[in-house]
Image 1 (cartoon, one colour):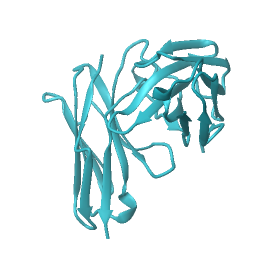
Image 2 (tube, chains in turn cyan, blue):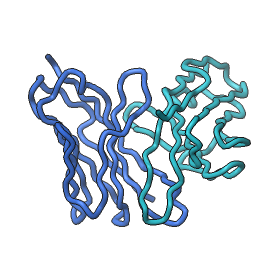
Image 3 (cartoon, one colour):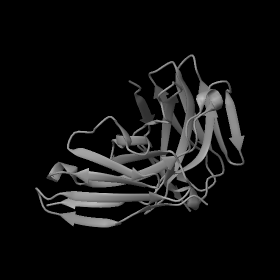
Image 4 (cartoon, chains in turn purple, brown):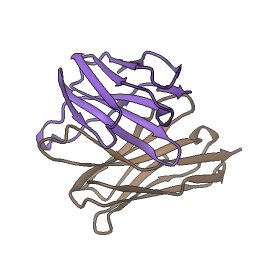
Length: 117
Length: 115
C-alpha cells in the first residue's frame, strides 16, 4: 500500500514564526503536491514538484515555499507565519504523468492542522 | 485556468436513499474526472474516476456520469449507508505536456446518511 505520512497532525505556531511541514511517501512517486483545505473552498494547490529539486507554483503560492532534496520527501515552508495561514494542509503524491496514458491517482497524507496565533 | 464548481455543499439523506453530487468545469480540454472521499481525520481517497471518452462508469453502488457537451459530471450513490457519510470532492484534469497530474478540485460536499 502507498503510504504518505506528514510530520505532525496538529501544530500551533505564533505569527512571524518560520514553519516547516514535512511529507514523506514510500512508493517512489515522481510527483508530490501540497494543498490547503478550507471549508467551502475545497482543496487548493499551493506548490507541486515533479522531480527532485524541481518545483512549480500552484494556484496560491504566496507566503509559501517548498523544498525537495530527496525523491521521497517534500517540505512546505511558511517563511513568516500569519493568521490567514491557519488551515488544514494536505500532502499528496502520484506517479509520473506519462503522455496520453493518463493521469495517475493522487495519494494523500492524513493532513496537518496548523493554527497560527 | 480550470474552474470546478460543486453542488450541493451539504447533502443529508436517509439510509437506503440515493445521493447525487454535481460538478461543472470550465476547460473544455479537461479529460479526466476523479472523485475523492474524505473521511473524518483522514486524507481524501480516490473512489471512482472517469475519462472523457466514456459517458458513464459504475462500481457497485457508485456511478459517475459525464456530459462533455454541457461540461458537467455527477456522482451517484445508491442504497446509501451510514459509512458513506464523508466529504466528497470532484476534480478535473487537463492532459498536457507539463500537466504533471495536476488536479483542480471542487469545493466539496458534506454527505450525511442518517440511519
